[in-house]
Length: 236
Image (cartoon, rainbow, N blue to C red):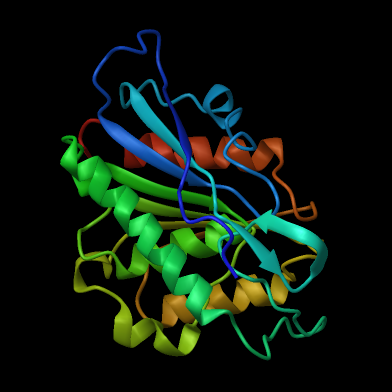
């Protein structure tokens, strides 16, 4: 059950002049139990100066009760149901929560468009649950996006993906990164998601690292290079 529907968010603009008009937006979606402050340091780690000023939007997930946490509501994009430890297969998924948060992410894309940022200049970037939402919402967005970044996540509602994917984002670039020792989202689950996306024709840049359910410096470096090319002036 969602305890609060209002989405709070924080924003910042990279570059030496924060008042400059941004040329692109990164919507950054945090993981389970954290909030919009969790990935705010990402702005300091990424050097996207080749693209120009970039707006970072950090929304908070709603507060909701989740089945794996009995001590009260957490910030969560959906209820993460227990998974089979070896295969990573879900018995059931919180489809209602996933679809509600997918609508929230689409509203954030629409908000950027309303203030002058073309959807084609918007990147969805998420970690863990946030990565799940970036992938789900990005594949279904009716407007062509610049790219999707999936850090330690997976593809939800796989059986519905092909039918529900938008034509506009059939060739959207996807950066997927995962820890080879991830005990939260097991590697097999992420690898299976990658394989399915590739079978549907998506352009997936896959990276794996000697880490758990986290982010490492090498991953940030690879992401920085990918984003720099994606957001360079001849792309945006």
